[in-house]
Every structure is written in structure tokens, then in C-alpha cells.
Amino acid sequence: GAVVSQHPSRVICKSGTSVKIECRSLDFQATTMFWYRQFPKQSLMLMATSNEGSKATYEQGVEKDKFLINHASLTLSTLTVTSAHPEDSSFYICSARDFRLAGRQETQYFGPGTRLLVL
Amino acid sequence: GENVEQHPSTLSVQEGDSAVIKCTYSDSASNYFPWYKQELGKGPQLIIDIRSNVGEKKDQRIAVTLNKTAKHFSLHITETQPEDSAVYFCAASKNFGNEKLTFGTGTRLTIIP
Image 1: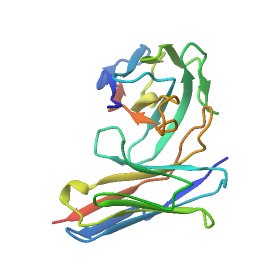
Image 2 (image 1 turned 30 degrees about the horizontal axis):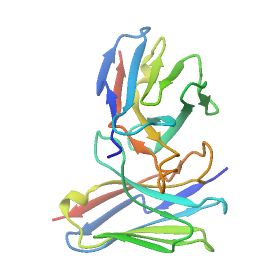
Image 3 (image 1 turned 90 degrees about the vertical axis):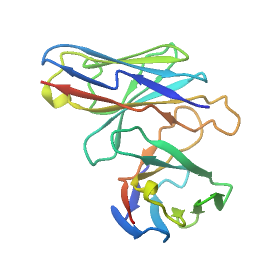
Image 4 (image 1 turned 180 degrees about the horizontal axis):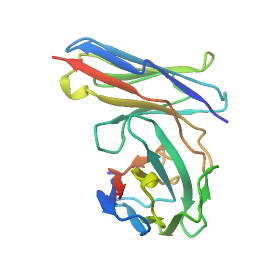
């Protein structure tokens, strides 16, 4: 149980284009989803937190107009990297949590990640 | 805010030996401490977690200990196997609202056959 999927697993795009990454909770309802960014050999950096039907809360230094997050349903959140540039190349990972799960309120389940390469 | 430190950054152990990774946290209000294993090119996978009302938790070859007074917690892997080679992250959070996980810097564990 508690499976999170991401699509696509990897994407290559040209500079200036926009890229959408989907994150789905497959067997539970995600009351909260999180988006992280990870550079090679580094830890996970939280970008934003989103609750279903609400606007995302972005971490300091993360441009909300560049990284658009939509959490339209309890099983789907999307991250759109707008006008992508080479410096946006990274590994993007989502996680999901259901605070109603008894004994598992805090547990975050992670997706497999999406590797973005901007040329 | 919370700050989590993790040591060592790299660890090599002979297959069959034990591995220990240690983390300290700064916020005494933190009460949830998960450990994640991340293999190359994949997302983190939860391997064990502990809450502050428990001092130790074990799951087969993996155990986690928590010392609330000292604000540190450790991951213990016994009888290590090659498939245990990965990067391990500790994290800490409070357990209400939208509390986020604060991650350690990671430990690259290599099991030597």
C-alpha cells in the first residue's frame, strides 16, 4: 500500500518551454502533497507544500510563478516548470501524506522522481 | 526552524557486519523521525520510523533508537547485505498540520562483498 507514482520519469526539453510533472497517490488519498528538488549527491530540498483545493505554500527562495503547483484532487498534484532553463535541470520528487491514516498521519510516501534536463 | 545533522556522510562496511548512522535534531518539539533509503535514480523509500513516545523500534535487520533528552536518533542495520548499499536519509518533523520533514544530509552506505 501507499504507492505514489510520477510521470514522466524523465524528460528532456528545450530552454524556454514548459514542462508538467504529475504526481499521483495510487491507493490512498493524499490530503497533502509535497514537491522536492534534489541535486546530485545532495539531500532533498522542499520546494512547496500543497493541500487539495488550496494554493500551495512555497518555501523561501522558490519562485511560485516559475514552479506552478496544482493539487486539484486528493490523488493528483502537478508541478509545471515554466520557461525552463538549464539551471532548472534537476531531479524532482513528490511525496504524499494522508493525515487521516491512523498511526500514519505524518508519514510521507515518495514517488520515484522525475529527471528533468533542459537543453 | 528544525536542523538535522547526520553522520557519517559515507560509510563502508564488510558484508555481514553492522552499520550505524546517527542523526541529531535541534527542535525539542519534533516527535516523528523516519529513515529513508534512496537507491540511485529512484525516490526515497521509507524503511523505518519512530515516534517520540518510543525509545526503540526494530524491523528484522533494521532498528532505530531515539534519545529525546539528547535529541539524537540512530539507524542500525545488522547482517548487512550488498543490497543495503544506498544513500540513507534521516528526517524529523512534528506531527500536526502541514508540518514538513527536515532531512539530514544523507549517508552513502557501501557494503563490501
